[in-house]
Length: 214
Image 1 (cartoon, rainbow, N blue to C red):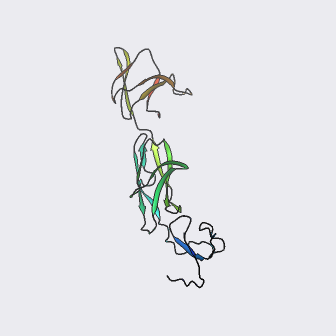
Image 2: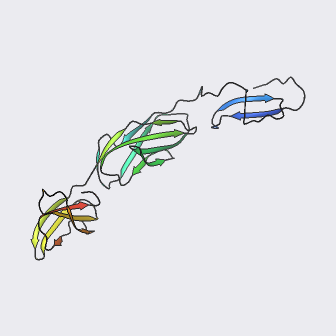
Image 3: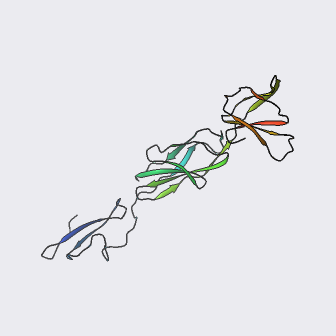
């Protein structure tokens, strides 16, 4: 590019980039020795984003909608990002309004640990080098308490509970009757799955709670 200069004497040349530093915005030539290259004043038209490549599309491909996981399971989240000339800075992952993680390297995947029980609405937000953003659609997933199969038998020391499923720590709770409003704490154990547990001097209805969720 050639610029004709019709005045003699020293000139200050300023090369200006957008404030985000990603796109060339304007080139100014002035004879003002007090020219401030960071304050363009009347030089040129207002800044625009004309000609900027479009943002990519973003979609969560895994997990699929309404897939169910057990409490404590790892939930891998994978994305499909369309081709783009934008520079991707990061992808953030959310459950509802709560940020659960982010990735700054391709393929911008993430594994969610210790997801709470219930329906969790997953979304992802992509941010490019100039802080433009695009969101994925919501993908709901269900996190449910693991099924614990319990058997009971009478032993020399009293009631023996044997269970399979879930993960420690296990909490034993009881009710005198199932119609009672609350469960009463009996004890907590880290015994391995299906280990027998003697409960002496207790009667009523019992349940085994895996981790923090029944």
